[in-house]
Amino acid sequence: MILAGGRATRLGGVPKPSLEYDGGTLLAHALEAARGAAAVVVVGPDAFSDAMPDSVLIAREEPAFAGPAAAIEAGLRALEASGSKAGWTLVLACDMPKAAEGVGSLWEALAMHPAVEGVMAVSVDGRKQPLLGIYSTAALEREVDVASQGSGLTNSSVFKLLARLNLLDVDVPAGSTDDVDTWEDAAALGIDYKLEADVKSQEETLEDWCRTLLQAFELEGVEVDINEVLAVAGVAAHSVVRPAAPLTTFIAGYAAGMARGIGQASDDASMNAALDLARKIAKEYSESGTDAE
Image (cartoon, rainbow, N blue to C red):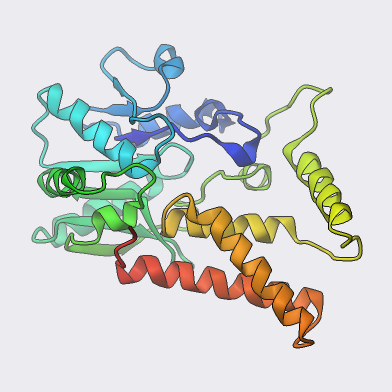
């Protein structure tokens, strides 16, 4: 199951599956990582169907852009409708061009621990990546059914969907979980995408918008680390639920302003401390399996 339906907001809307890496698109690399599967489904826009073999199934989460948990549900439904009876399902985000290097490690770990309900990749810096994992198909279907009877999976967290599964964390080779969320990520991986000359890059637009906001609030002297703010928003979106991103950054900014206002620290120190705390809490929240309603 390849998830390819995000908005790519931090890439200015440029579709991640179409980005090219090492001679092929990210979607092509994801399909290669899933080579040998009994059935493959890509959950994303129909626009990518021309780039895929006829044997690959196409599905779409409902509503569109409802998040990866909803996409997993859509993928499972499509595989079930196709008659696929595989006992294990590889779940893979299409924006990790080196994921194939980690898939082998996951299968090896699963072979040595057949009693678990799945294996999840862990990067070299200790971050869990649920969108590079192999899970019991029956267990996934069970949890999707439970969620469907409750609040559903729209904008829900994948960690929450998997919280009750007996999973084994597996260390994967360095770079296996590197994904493309920003143009900086793309550049670090050697992905080069040329925007039209008359269109501002996303970074330029964000910097311009940041200056506009600071001027409007008479905060011209305040330095804002845009990449750090976006990084914290990304952690909150992945670890809690997607709408947690703006809420988290708002509360962190409010807390930083309060700390600065009472003289606890400078602008930079207050903001850095607030962002660090927000990131820490978001990670702990996901790892605790807290029920986020």
